[in-house]
Length: 266
Image (tube, rainbow, N blue to C red; front, side):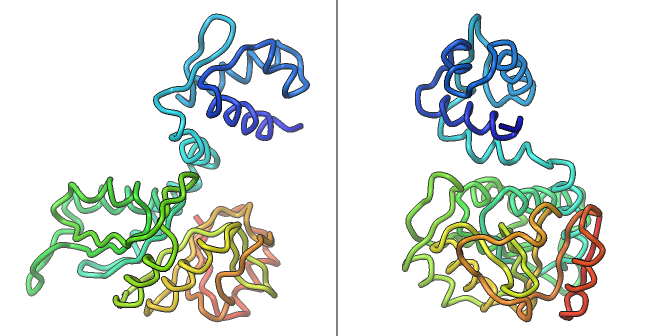
């Protein structure tokens, strides 16, 4: 079992019980207590849990763990990707954001841009700097308090793992809006099958985001390139730009370019 797999298992156990005992965790994960202690120390450094004598307890409430843990993986790549995406957006744009750790970083980068003055409305433009349409509760919560954004939140049923709203109510709102740009986080990109995610209900909503947008930008780290996931969102013909990190394989980048997609690496 790799370190990432161990960490995922430990955080799952912590989410269920709210606390971990080193000895019991070692049995559950089938490694030595010394390995568990090192794992818990590293997770504590990332503020994903609080170390205690003989174990650990949840940092904050347990339902925060899945998204916060995912956010800690490839964090620097996601921040670079987000910064590049913000440079592709224009003041006055209506922007669609689905849920996920990379799109959350895009929202944060956009907020920092407007706070610094670069995204303030110019001459001939009135109202908010950006309109953001999202089905992600955490993104809406971070941006709603900022006056430079108009936030449109879809209805729907919340998925606790990703804070995304899904279902017919979500689709109903998206069918009534028109987007300049859709920025989509995904779980896999395959040259033949297209763009994919793990959950079929999330795939359907992401597909609607793409259909309602004039331009579609994928944001994903290179680890998901060439990977397949359960539910298909759309074909590559619907994608205009992919922003990823420099770890993308050259042949994969070439195949995407052949499909007419602009590939931006950061």
